[in-house]
Image (cartoon, rainbow, N blue to C red; front, side, top):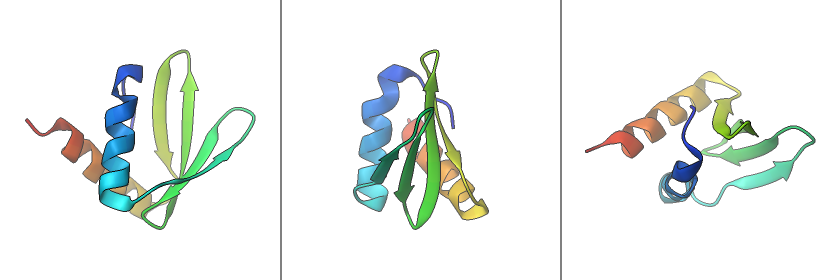
Length: 72
């Protein structure tokens, strides 16, 4: 799920609201997050942040987050 750098606070707030505080682990080129019982990779190269799911269940969580963030 790609998003604008300015959307980062909204994305993190949606994660906290729906799944609680995310566990975070830093790596050289990315950051690992765990929330909703799933693992995600966060990358922010060239001001193009994205969350990448590590499982089908994680894909479902990202779809739900996207729906929450794009509701009018």
